Image (cartoon, rainbow over all chains, first blue to last red; front, side, top):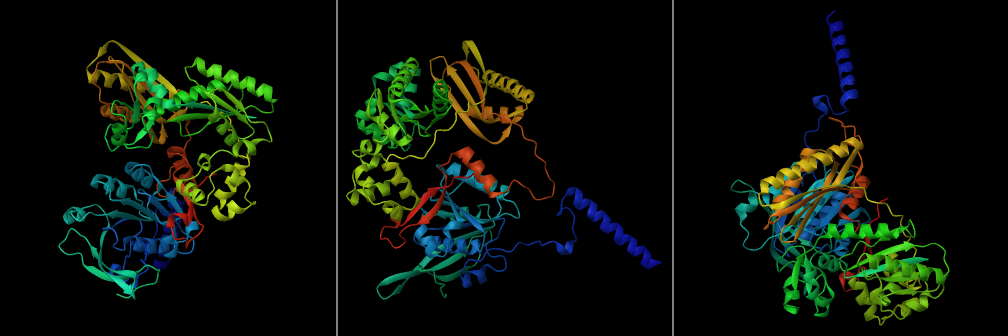
Length: 241
Length: 395
């Protein structure tokens, strides 16, 4: 008798689930066991960095700031990340506010240019508007907003993060810092992850510079966000830290 | 036969029309008054002094210190051009224009099959028609857009390039007249190719081999073969309401209230017709004779008076009004039928398709924002010559 009651309850639950899903959509009601609370993040293409950023990597559906002074290896890291985000079929968008995107170097870093769409806005404000417009577009693996030295204001970033859907692409903001930029200001910028890239030293092979040893630091509101070092080579090979 | 109608100094001419005093002095049009801003357009006198569009305002002012600086009003220019295009529809329903209109407005009219004599007669009629509107124009007639444009640039009246003589006509023009990016133009010059005729005699496929799709298009252009067609003219639908004040009103709150009232009436009209708008423009005329106009393109097509009123209030607050206001004009543009959309509370949205998003971006920001990239010579010493950016045309 008890078993019969259970079966009826199960059947009623299944019917209820079916009704709700038919009426409100597939994801409206589903068993907790099927819910994936954490989306897999993107890998950077560098084992040392991936290990340091584990388990989330560069989060999807969230904003990541990648900040550095010029010639720190940041663009190389960004291009490798685009390569990882493209995977086998995803499209990536690059919003090039300063007109500095280097396709030849990006291709050398493994980016498939056929699956990269370059967007060139006229003004910084238009860059933010365009970014907001393309957020959540499918099937886009990553969206890079290269703002150069014009770092958006906190309010603008807040609006951007608010518009980013949870299941959207990884949004990566690349910004150049001046040497006097206040670290505490950067730490308070509204982003899921704030990464500061510093050049430690050039890597030489004979009389030629072939890469750069970088330190990546996680800026947080807490006292210490931790850091990691990694060798970044200009020919696309993976370095050993 | 395609007629290219060219109006030089278009934006400056419109500014001078509003304030005739500006005719006698060099004029610089900019978006903002800051020295770091760029000049959008100049008039003939400023150009003679060395100023040019794209130059920093500080540099242009150094070249002609006596120049007047006036605000650029691209929406006003576009509206006036649209009116002129509408006038030209008496000759053909196929009338379009180039997007860049600040310095020189360029319109194309497809006149169909005509004898040369008839084409010249129609060209002369166009000149007179636009002269009545206050514009001195030149008209070029040819079988393709590019050749017609070149012909219009030669003369102050009408110039016809007979069919079959396009390549010979273009041969003496410099390669910089071709629609090229700076780097390609420089590259051609370094190779000793200074004139279009030198490109035209290159073996077929030589340009395409070096420049990809861009090269293929160029090799067609230099032979006078321009595949671009003239689009059909579609009159823009808009709703406009104005309110005048006599005497002028200095109280901003009154102006604000009148704008809200105008918006509500316009919104009511849209509701009645089942329409939405995608642009809002607010014009304010002042006692001193000045006219301010601010516009905004809307993220989504809407017709709600509340949202439009808030946007109009923001536009009004951005205006620096120093004299009593004598008239206010509200204009709702890019009208389109309201499309019902099925919202889903939990389901996946259909509006996230990349193609739809790109279409939307092209409609709102223009077709010069999206680029695809192709590598040409990846190992070329100059990185900027190693690739080509091609505009993405979203169908």
